[in-house]
Amino acid sequence: QSVGCDDYLGSDKVMDKCGICGGDNTACRVVSGVFKHMLTNLGYHKIVEIPEGATKINITEMSKSNNYLALRSRSGRSIINGNWAIDRPGRYEGGGTMFTYKRPNEISSTAGESFLADGPTNEVLDVYMIHQQPNPGIHYEYIIPGDNVISTQLLAHRRPGEPLNGQLGMAESTDREDEDLHREAGILTGQPAGTFPVIQPGRFPSHQPENQVPAVQPPRQNREHNWKQIGKTECTTTCGKGSQYPIFHCVNRITHEEVPESYCDSSTKPIPEEEACNIFPCPAFWDIGEWSECSKTCGLGMQHRQILCRQMYANRTLTVQQYRCHHLEKPETTSTCQLKICSEWQIRTEWTSCSVPCGVGQRTRDVKCVSNLGDVVDDEECNMKLRPNDIENCDMGPCAKSWFLTEWSDRCSAECGDGIRTRSVVCMTNHISSLPLEGCGNNRPSETTPCNSGPCAGKVEWFAGGWTQCSTECGSGTQQREVICVRKTEGAFDVLNPYECSYLEKPPSQQSCYLKPCGSKWFHTEWSTCSKSCEGGFRVREVRCLSDNMTASTQCDPQLKPEEKEPCNTQDCVPEIDENCKDKYYNCNVVVQARLCVYTYYKTACCASCTRVANRQSGFLGRR
Image (tube, rainbow, N blue to C red; front, top):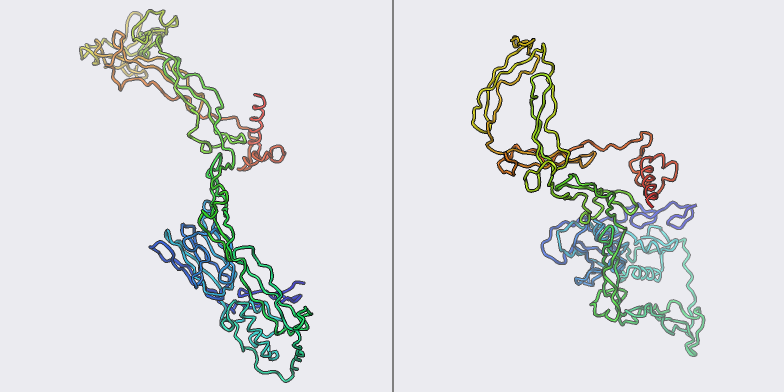
């Protein structure tokens, strides 16, 4: 069976919020609120007053700020963060109770600081805020006893059968018992008798029931023995103001020999009073705070901690000037730290060949960010400032002896039957001057290519007459001609209706003409091979403007200049996908990092990831 708060076996009584065993929460009152005033002046500003007898005290800053909470007694004694000195988080005694001062981590937490205490307080306390930036709001809450409520401390110390506020209807207490109870209340609350707001002397019944037998008074002890102080208890501290109490023993008044305490009247035994001892201050010491978080999530970083010179006095730890700790070596306030090894850049392939056979081109290589576990991760996890180049220019030397050629002509040389199309071919040096054919080697590109417009005999076709004179004397002009539909027969042509040739493409009856050069034109080399086989590469060629005598010229129309670079192989690189080997879960990277692929279940559930790691490891072992 369980034991209730009344110490009876099988009792189901529990403490209510007022600290009353079996209470109904009506014996006390909860006081709470939020201090939201906007402050303008820097310094200490009073927030709330905690009355005497308050319990379950909670003062909490609603969010993190550069402000600080402070606490002092009504008498002006600083308890926490007084005199512009910021105390470390910890436990501080004040107002008859112990306050827990919390200040969350300044880097990782967004919570504000707080004071917590169980109480009850034995004096009025004032809560302040050291204002340095806009007030985020201060929540305060405490519990105070209701009117005519018995003290929770007296209730805890009540003897079985002892009356509460006269409600039990027990026998009248003697004047001496009433006086002892009154004195007990003063001791428990730390107040003069009669000032505790809950218990009042004389509240017990003033008469004795008829059926109550008066208590038998003990026989008065003779006065041959009395109480004598024979010494003091050991001091509670070796420095910084402790306390000790006198020790009283019963002795013979004449011989002063110690006798059993029963020889003396216990009612006359002096009550030991606390005496101060070892009031000289303790030596100052360095109070070492907790290390801050590392300044970097990976690699070598820095962390800091607060070092204060502190000194104990009167059970309080005070912050003092640092020169008082000069006799001690000051601990380090900064230190290096490393949470994990950073990911690093790895060059996975050698440089590719240059994208052009001569002149200036580009070459590439594969650069990846790899974690300390060997997995390829996002580039952001590596230091972008240290990333090796994955593309660079390459100079294959001047294209001193390359064949430059124009596009093929549009028309075949024969209207029907076999004919040819032509283009211009020239060997160029870096001095832009022509050389003999052997200057570019024996692989001269052909200047002609065969073409065939179909058989001539019996063929229906368009026949074009001669062009008229060019409309301009040089450069581009226009020419006119007559175009008719004919059928070729043996030695003659029959003129047909144009409808008969309508299925054929009709030659133009007008064209541009060029009698003599009025400028220069563009020449270009063959395209280079594509720099990549997929996912978008590029190819290049060299383009030059040449005059009629094949010398460099600046007279070419820039808008007609052929492209020197163009994209190629833009299709995606599609890896071979095994439809029977896929990842069934989105977080299979965790399985790989935990090295769980050796188990059949994970090898099946994360087939693709485990297979990829196995292939990478086998390739690494093969290179070794």
